[in-house]
Each structure stands twice: as C-alpha cells, then as structure tokens.
Length: 92
Image: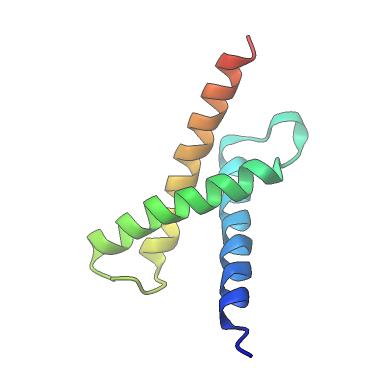
C-alpha cells in the first residue's frame, strides 16, 4: 500500500496553513487570533495561483524555490485581503 498520496495531501494542507497564517500576520489579525479556516483556504489558493505563477515567471518550473514561496505568500495576502473586503462588506 502506498502512502505517498495521503502524505502529499497532508503536506499541501499544512503548507497552505502556514502560508495563510503568514498572510494574516502580514495584514494584521482580526480579534487577535488567526482564523484557521481562512488560513487554509487563502494559503492553498494563494499558493496555487501566486506560487505557480511566480515559479513559472522566474523559470524555476515546478521546483520548490524561493520564488515560489514568495509568490505563495503574495498570493495568500491578496486572497486574504479580498476575503476580508468581501466579508466586511456583506456583514454591513
């Protein structure tokens, strides 16, 4: 039995959580704590879009390099900012 796929999925979720938490720390946390649901979603979406785009522009391909990590954080910051703007507007 191969455990590669479940381990890969778990690794991607944990990486997304860390990137999403970093994005919330950069933008400032609301209510003094990290919203882990937002961290997972923003981290995964931001990592996919920003990290993939930055890696391809830098010419790194799909390797794990600094350009991909920086792109992931930038993408997660953008996703978190949009999420907060839409969430703040709908609660008024």
